[in-house]
Each structure stands twice: as C-alpha cells, then as structure tokens.
Image (tube, rainbow, N blue to C red; front, side, top):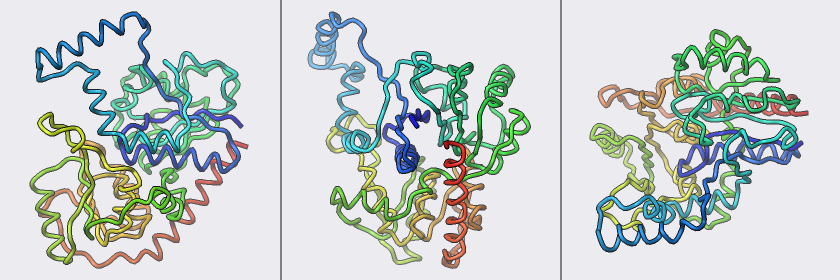
Length: 373
C-alpha cells in the first residue's frame, strides 16, 4: 500500500526526527511504500536570483548588518544542521509539496497522521505552509476514498486548545477516520468529549523499534563513545536545572556530559555550533548510567535503554505527555517540577516495565497491521 505520512516536519529536533524515522521504518517493514509529506519552498521567479544575491552581498559584506538577510541565516543553519541533514537525507523518504491542497485523490491509498503533537494547534499550524490545524485531520481528502489512520497523535496537553470553529471542523473530519490512536491517556477523553470519536492509547512510534535498531544507527556511522556517565539533555536551561545536574553527579559519582545543542549566538562561528547527530544523541543516552532531562523523547529513550533517570517537568511544552508515559510504566516518581522536589530514589527495576513495553508494542503493531490491511 502506498502511504502518505503527515507529521511535524523533521528538522533539527531529535525526538521529532526519530519518531518520523521509527514510524516510517515500521510501516516499510510491513511491506508498505511510505512517504513523509513536507513543504519545500522554491523561488517562483528565477530571474530574481541575481538581485537577491546582490542584496545579500551588500548586507553581509558592505553594510555589515548585525542581522543578516534570511539566506545567510539559512547558509549558517545548513552548517549547524549538517549531521541532521545527513540523517534525514539517508533515512527518511519524502514527497515534497507546496500545500496539502496540491495532493490528488490517486496519490496515496492511505494517510497516516502522527505521531508527535500534530493535533496541537500551536505546533500544527506552522506546518505545510498552512496556518491551519485541519490538514492534520485530512481536510484535503475529505471526499476521497482513502484509508485514514491517526497513529499516536498528541494534543500535547490535557486541556482543549481549539477554537469553537476548529472544534466543529475537526470533529466532522475526525469521524471520517478508520481508526484513531493517541499518545496520552488524557487524549482518549479529549477525543470523546470534543471530537465525538473513540480512540485507543498506544505507544510513541520510537518505542516500536528495538534497542538493536537504534544501536545499528550509531554503529553504521562509527559514532564515538560518550565522554561521561551522566547525560543531561535540557531543552529549556535554567540555573536550577544546572544545579540539579551537579547534585546528582555528586551523589552518583558520575561525570556529566551533553551533546552540542547549537544554541543560537551570532558571536560564535557556525562551525563551532554544529549540532550533534541523532546517532550521537542516541548513543549518549545508551552510554549513560544516569539521565537528567526535560524532554519527552529524552524520557522515552531513557526507558527504552533501561536507564536511571529524572525528568524535570516542562509545563510550557505540555505535562500530560510526561505524566501519561511515566504512568504507563509505573515510573511517576521520576517526574519532578522543581529542584526542591528532588530526592534520591532507589534504582529502577526494569523487568516489569519492559514486560509492559513488550505488551504495548504488540498492541500498537496490531493496530497498524489491522487498520492498514
């Protein structure tokens, strides 16, 4: 079956890129031909390019503007993102479109929406040049004879963020889906209450692959071992989180390390801000004895690799994701909301957690097989 995947565009986000990779890999192993739909902007008037290059030269080399034109920013980002671009080019298969309205009825036999926070308006509206949530409910295919599957879609929060008009529109579209699964337990009730549909709680796509699958990625690129034993992956840095890392390092006798996060700073040359590859990020979690993170997928891979970890709650990015994931494996005590809440905890016994993971993985795979047959 030829399947179009609609997800948040993989760019330079470790979790977002790896969930797209995992979902596509799982579907292809089932025998499907899959493409991730992504927008790719092009200049519509080639004759404008010489003028554009002259403008860039003027701004950057003569006027020495502190804020260079967009193209120089893009060139800089191509350096910073080079390892991500290499991973994406090598492993992900795309169908580039201007908008979803450019798709035609015969392009795909099925569409899979998910995973990640594709049903959260604040994130979804920035994708596929649309400024709307409806494309993630397949509004463009409303009258087509295609299979429609939502796999582990997330609202990112347990509160309803849609406008009344968006709620009416998306509720009608959701009822056209053949099957809907969500990534958080709270999303089951949101689907029932606001969209009028039944949903099942399943795993994030990254948890459908085995640890051997991820190990093969860093072995293929000969990714070097990590220089430390306490991996910290912090999206929103603060002095309190830094203090937590130092405290846990002292208590556990571990050496802190992280990956290059490519923090934006025009005072630092781009080649010094090259973001670490997804393979290096994966190996960093694998090599660590302890993980401190405020990232959902940092939490996911800590569980997958059987690591001792602490999650620092990131309320602005959505707490229900963390709460639902940790509750699934009986690890709620690993979530804290402040430095003062932290207390040393007994080691995690992963025997029961990984047994439940295997059961949930089977349920998730069955959902995909049965609804894409």
